[in-house]
Length: 619
Image 1 (spheres, helix red, strand yellow):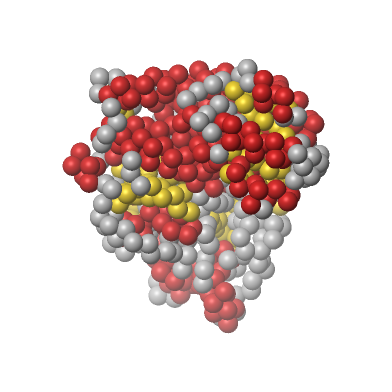
Image 2 (spheres, rainbow, N blue to C red):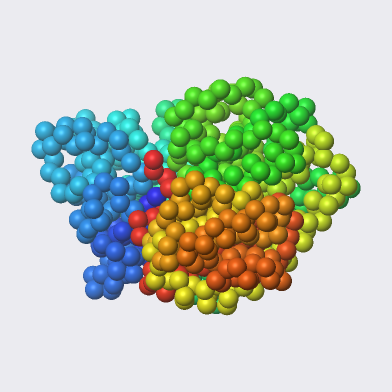
């Protein structure tokens, strides 16, 4: 969840480190710090709070050097503080490192090292790693005449063998100033390859504008970086040739442009991101979807008689929409599993079960672990993922990329609609492979092709949503209610409000209100009803009236021109009318905007809400 950067080469390291930390701040913003080597020392600067606080410290206490590492923290062990901020120092200052992940056996390592005389000054698990590297380096020096890169590498390898848990590490050595050793196990690291220089980052965003040549580290791989050389090796099997990939992103993908916040920018990008998800994937002649990345033969695909979708958070909500879509159009039984639960369960699955891991980042620890467990059992595991080169994208047997571009805002918006779009393509693909008629496939394609424009029209509700937000921003409890395809949207709307405004919100199937939650209804608890025209439209209106009869304020999301809803609800936000199975794509838009504006009115940081980080790479 933390963000790591590193640089070695001819330029001043501090500029890249700071800029990189700003770009990675969505991964953690409890504190930030950098370490830069000079000829005889490693200078560390760190500060609790946002990266801007660190930048202010560096204005007062600048550091100079051509090799350095940096870190922006999401706290796991130890409260946010200057002391607990990374980088951490090992021994007597001969080692400085940054770490993303969780060391599960840090407590026992700490006791052992304290017994050897090492003094701990922080509450973090990372400090044990720093002292352990220093200890092994000292032990190696007893056997050799002088310090070398090989001794440093050996000390790191010996340390890694004793760690239980996850890590992305970057290590500096005081007495060899032009050296960084990086290692990965369970926490992502990307290396940027420049001309006589190398970069390290937790994801590719800090590298944009510096290099387009990248190496994605896999688990148990170690990189030894000097100004003119990159050596790559596996912890257990030795040296290996780096596989260099070309990065397709450009700086415009991560710039705010004319928008005040990334969340708003990403909400408004959704017509384009949906077009990107559809581009080249609709086959008019065969009335189906083209998904070559599944990497399975038609015979293997036709054998599938059960699909399990596994995900976390917003991606799990997208999976629920996918369940409805695939079961309706392909008639294949679908289960949606929380990845954090699936990884520890042992549900019965046959060799005809297909697993889809749904993830924006491709690095979510629980989703990755659940996918690996299913792979271990011999099941075909595929990914619906946004980030090229991510761990899940590389380890899955195949899958479908979202092509949504970087999503910087912590609260996911465009990734949700892109995931639902891809799941719609899967429903069409499997449906046409089984019983869905040619004509029905053609209608499905026409409806999908119209959706980017429909989403563009849905965004026209912005001012109406803003006015509604002003009326309800002071409320502290919300209910979100929908049925059928829009039940998952109710869950997603409630999650968005919780994430960025810190308001308690719950999502329910509208008909379930009378089975308990209706007891929560009062004049201070607005209910957001998702009630576009559908086969169960009259049923949802009845549920709405049940809430109104008990004095609860009602905000309705309804189709344009729906006067009946306008007579019943206190406030109505209109969206364009679309086919029922595609309603989640347009209904999500006003709910995203509603959470955005309520959070602004309450003075919350919409892009970086408290206690959250974008890519959850710890369990």
